[in-house]
Length: 375
Image (cartoon, rainbow, N blue to C red; front, side, top):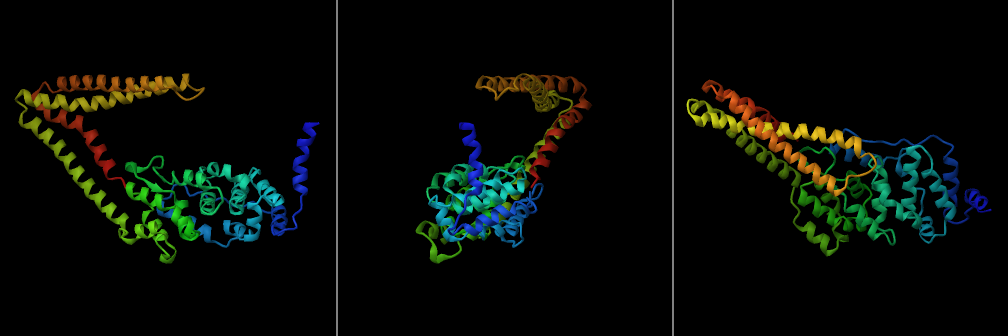
């Protein structure tokens, strides 16, 4: 009996009618599923400014499958009905989109539910916005959360991860989620701009990409600013990202110069002192870091191979992590010792001491210079 009752729920939901302000929306949502699947754009492989700019373009586009084509269908009256929980047919029709297999329907269904500010969907918004392939959802939902009743904790959770270090970021660079910057510029309300003040502060602290564009959006419209926002925008750093970029370039040049001086100094010292035990000690010392690096790599590969075979069932325990760290430290120590001994043996001849030093330090020096000059 209970199974029959559960099976009947979708049928009743599908047959619900709405004669209120959401009636036209319900008809559209149910009929649209028979049409073409909306495209889902994913900006992988592009630099930050391209990703953010492309997203702004999609959010403002009037194309028939772009987010704006759907959000404009939701009137203030329909949103008010949805907030009160009085538009079950409309929310059911929008949720039907999210239950399709195609990412395009899922994306647009989530956008609709956020724009309607459906109370029943609020608990899912944090998970929706964590999906990296749904930038439009993040943008629209972040914008709506600024005025969504009872959404403060969800909004704070989402905005708390807006300033981030993407996986594989060069030199540990930080960025603001392009969706947050895009929505602040093209969909931002005064309420959203106020809510984004902590994001702007975090972006400044981490010198994050996107800071200038976010500051530009937040500090627009002086007549609607709170005291905190006015204070933040009263003395904004002009072109902060350019200053940070120049500062990093200066730091890179200084660090590259220091690394070059150490490398050249060690090779020169080994050559000048080649007939003395000092030259041999320099060559021996040069072999230690290379050996340590080889040791860490070798032990790390072995540890990873063992872990992949024995820990497929779940995450490692704290003890496993301590053991792994211990193994890597051990690999460094053993590798460094063996590297030093090998370099010492190779530098037995005075004429070999400078070349041994150069060969031992070259991989570390070149890697350091390469990493420092990545942008």
